[in-house]
Image 1: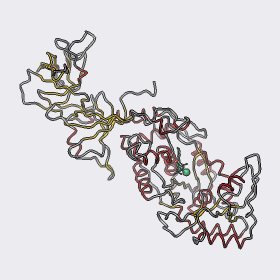
Image 2 (image 1 turned 90 degrees about the horizontal axis):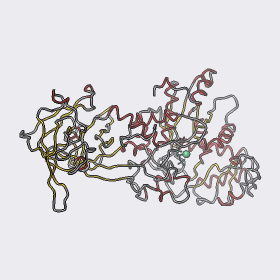
Image 3 (image 1 turned 135 degrees about the vertical axis):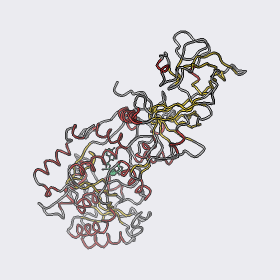
Image 4 (image 1 turned 135 degrees about the horizontal axis):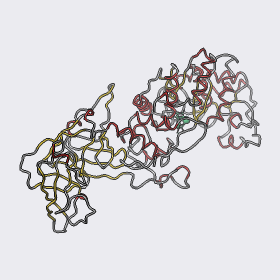
Length: 564
Ligand code: ATP
Ligand code: MG
């Protein structure tokens, strides 16, 4: 989809209005704020495309900010993967920031809140605090610690930070309003104690860590973010976001604003990092980059291109209504993309040997288009010879006149891009299984020569035996058997599709060999080798491939069941 073709989304409209009114002197700054507690998934990509896209389109800056306020779950492994995935998607960040860069500033701000009587140390348990919250129509109950003197709050908060108070024994709460209809205003927790885990960047420097609500808006402010874009579940947090900023930023001065859009949900997929981590930890998938995972690295390994993923995000658009996107649209997008670019090759999935009895030569090389009828997209060399692999299903010993492929005494059949043959018979083992098919060929029927124009009712695939490569084909399908795993009752792990991976040993055209040793590089990033295996689907070379083992992943089938 051309950028110019689509109309502005509602966030772009807000940005254009701000630019027209000279808000922030025309400065546009966004951020993408992942928590480094898992790998990026396609839902995150929706946010990435908007955060980076807005900055690109309006000459602004988008920074990467790791929201690393919970050392229990966070790790550098995730930080590294997030950077790699954003770069692979083709986006450039201005700076890399970490919420942990602001721990001192946030701590100082908390002290200021305490001194101004806007925060207090609560010694109740998490359960007690939850019980006192009340309901949206019923006021909460004030904590017995709510009115303790400022000096005591200061001393206790310091003790929390000094490691003198065990985890879970105290929290710092904002003193706002226990009767506010917005539950987030009922004295939200600002700080909690975490001593059990070192932080991946600050080690054991801190024993208290800010909560999301106290960290996010302030971090936006410290960095100079103008448009802080997030998903709809944060609508109810926005008043608190503004409240905290109001406490230390005078009215009329620069301040960040939060805007919300709808999350991406896709059928037959779970989009929760927690559930994905569970799948990985319990070995239900092969890792975060398992080609069935909706992670960026999983999609990449599956054979999705960055271009197709971004086109998909462009197609679904941004609104303020939650919904569910048909996974067929994602599959349709990659199929359309690969249709234009993936070289075609032959592969035989259920091989039986074909011997051409009247072929006398040593073998020959056939030049075939990478994509039929598109010579400009290059050609490849196919080896041809006396013995070929063909699909078992392309031969029938006894066939009626509706069967157009090989059968003794039957019709002429074209071998893809080469000669016309006619079956003469077959050989079977003791159990009656066909082991060899026999045929004769017409030397004057080669494709590309005058005789090559002769029409046949059927064309079949083949791979020359001596040059064929053995390969492992991993046929991937949707990971879940149900349309909306999150909405179903029961454990999501019981909803996995038992046929999401089928492995087959296949024979592939030898022309693939040379390409396996010469990865295509673009801007220093190795590109995946994509192919259409004729009649079978689109495939990509898997990184498990070694000198003696070729592994091909099926990206998608040839059949489109989306726009039908
Ligand atoms: P959690 O906070 O539960 O760990 P998360 O999916 O919200 O999970 P974050 O790392 O906080 O993960 O997300 C980073 C950004 O990506 C946020 O701005 C968030 O709104 C956005 N995001 C996350 N999931 C989706 C989704 N499914 N669709 C669109 N945006 C998403
Ligand atoms: Mg989040």
